[in-house]
Image (cartoon, rainbow, N blue to C red; front, top):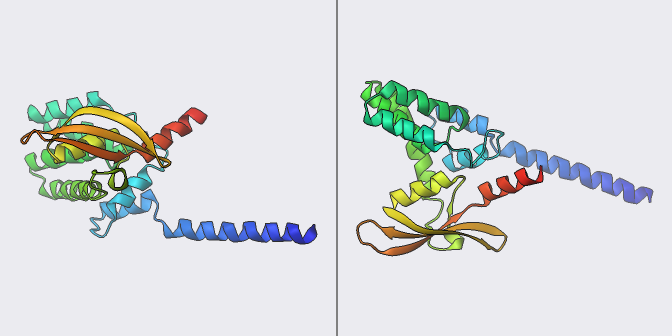
Length: 209
């Protein structure tokens, strides 16, 4: 019994060391964000997005359509300071929000601040590239990896698609949003797969609290 107990203790100790080493090898959201703000072009933006989903601020279902509409309205009316204020309010809680960076890029450019416009362009392109290269959406195995519903619609816009139908499908322990969409120009009907494990698992954890 003593030998068995010692073995268990040793095993748990080794597991703790291994987990600690793994954690040390994985940059935190704060570390990645610091690199982004330093204009570090080596940043892994997919890791930035995924690590944000592990922070207390992450809530994929709290995105305010009213705030986004207000930003769009301010941009259309050339109220660029107001657009910046609203966009920065979003970025304070969610720095990986593509729409907010897009608004900041436009507003700063129109206000003549080329350095800040260039910075938000850098972040926007990095986030967008990480999203669009996460898969091709043609099958569950090659689904786009998203952390929010907003990201799904950004992908569809980039592909020039309009959603006609949406359903949640569970397959092989994963969850997928399966979108039936129509191409705006060719009218071709396509099926696009999004892996929604991250927001789905977040929601499940909220129900268990």
